[in-house]
Amino acid sequence: MKIALLNGSPRRENTFAMVEAFRQGAEAAGHEVEVLHVGKMKIGGCLGCEYCHGKGEGKCIQKDDFEKLLPAYTESDMIVFASPIYYFSMTAQMQAAIQRVYCIGKPAKATKAALLLSSGAGAYDSAIAQYKSYMGYAGIEDMGIITATGEENKSEAKLSEIRQFAEKL
Ligand SMILES: Cc1cc2nc3c(=O)[nH]c(=O)nc-3n(C[C@H](O)[C@H](O)[C@H](O)COP(=O)(O)O)c2cc1C
Image 1 (cartoon, helix red, strand yellow):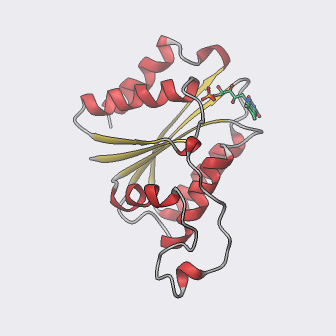
Image 2 (cartoon, helix red, strand yellow):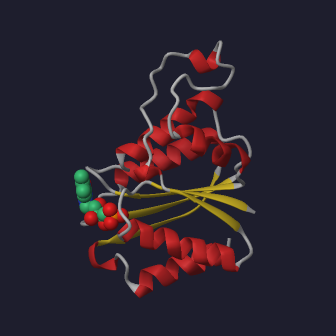
Image 3 (spheres, protein in one colour):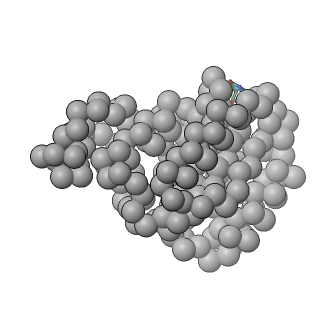
């Protein structure tokens, strides 16, 4: 299946290691993975202008990096959200990427999703609640949530858990 892996971290550190482990496992199982480094993209917050639902006919009025993400949302069978925890939630870049999907309503084709979260001390409730509510609304099945807290980050045990998870999808 075609998997879009959204990486909300602006760094090539802890979340990136989780992303790479997932990619390795999924590719070993024969899946096609596209990694999108959302954390480094310039994506403005939704303006709520409703241009997309009128004259825009599904297109957002803002011309920015969200255009690079749209094919992933429309053509993928699975979407994986990966993010560090910033102040009890996913990064602002990831929030913008999620909320701008408003222009097309819901990811068109995706039936599966997963969530990878990294943190210093573990404060996942808000990010997990948002992800579960969003997937419920979009009718997308949650395949699993993996977290890496403090020293678990970049540990071989955690990366192996992620690789195995992706291999079994
Ligand atoms: C702006 C900012 C806010 C953070 N907020 C939290 C937090 O609320 N809870 C927590 O446990 N860690 C928090 N952290 C720590 C990161 O989640 C943690 O270091 C994570 O592993 C970073 O991932 P990365 O290497 O992919 O950037 C924060 C870090 C930053 C830079």
